Length: 283
Length: 297
Image 1 (tube, rainbow over the protein chains, first blue to last red):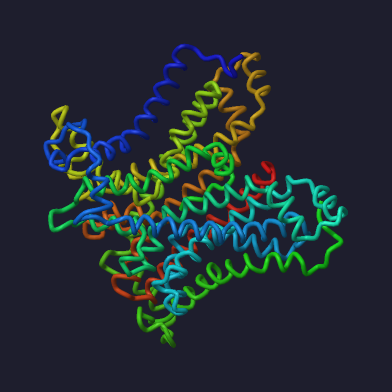
Image 2 (image 1 turned 180 degrees about the vertical axis):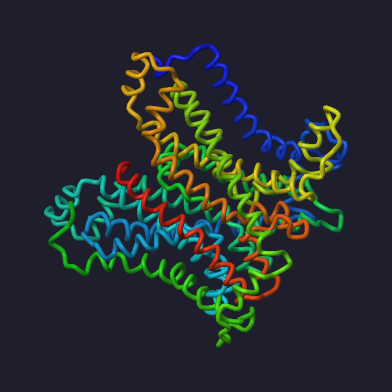
């Protein structure tokens, strides 16, 4: 049985709203795809809505050739994202386990304060991080960017992992201990395998965050060969004095989009469940 | 249930690494920013900066390029527009999806959430392309019905409106996500008994559904507000704050003063202003978030 019985008019209004929102969501994406997959000489005024011919040349020209960014900026983004995901996962497992299994009032209060600070979007952190790194010599280093990403993703990660550990019955751990397993073996054989889905979500969210990051590397990485694709793409904004090189900018943006959309498609259900809780993961 | 038999030191050993990371990279940088906001430090002269009291705040507030009230106005319009648009669209969609079949719902939800995972820079480029005077879809569609092209991003009014629309596109997904989660927890029996009692759908929404998702609505509102206030990537790649500072928000001003002018002291003072505004909102947010999280996990 339907949850609510609607009149025909109400159905029509609902359908119109759903379809209008679909168009609003998909139209910009369709347009950037339409520009990215057409030959550059057809991406000029007056423009056709559909590409006259379909080509992958623009994507190739982003990766190889004279005006290419090369694969390096994408590789950089992947390395920073993956390293930050690993650090985030380790810190979140440690912190989450401590909160879930021990009674640490003081630790919880400190983390609440840190959580409040870290729910502030990354933007309010760029100048502070810039000052700290200029002072401490981490400015311009890959390690600096990775640590900055990880610090941004860890607070939410700790809370998510605490939730995950609370769902694992403590008796499983106690049983393993009674059977003679040490702390290390219990962790490796019982705790980590059971918490793996949660760890996966925390690491994935952290990776996406790092892969998408722009303002932090923009301010922290002046060296071109260290920049991720988000920063490197700016080159096409004023390409060889001809204004914006839209075919390559569109193709380069799409290349950045493919990995996140793939991950999202694979892990959509899990991410959506946690995302509602996480709320501010994207800032 | 918790471990009691182990020593008191164990949880602190576990917390040491995450706390170190967060203290070193979140708490310390903010503390340094508060300190530097009262100094005349510049990029390159960060050691032993000279204290200047509140001079930085004064020169930010009395600056003429651009005037501070103008920055505040743009920030307010941009944040307010984003808040209203994304709350309206996100909540409306969540209500619409609430009453469709669950298989259709999960497919539609997946599509609506695509913008949520896309990098803000890529969203910025996507919308800048939409508004491009020559090859943008906006002007192409206008041209098809015989309307003259508009230079969207170079006129103040249309530029701010264009930025708001782009940012609603970027933000409504998270509102939809929070609201769908909350609606899924509304007991179906309540809604059905309302039907049996003969209440109209509009009345059920007003009297049954909306009151029971109010905490989530507040949460979604705060998320939209804080993120709207702090949007940087999107505006930076779409207009860069231009033309002539006309779309410059607090976040962009902070970045420009710090990096372009290298005036770390003044940049830090803008950061303190932005930080204080966001923190007020975020504190409220964390309280609600923790209450909700306890219900869900």
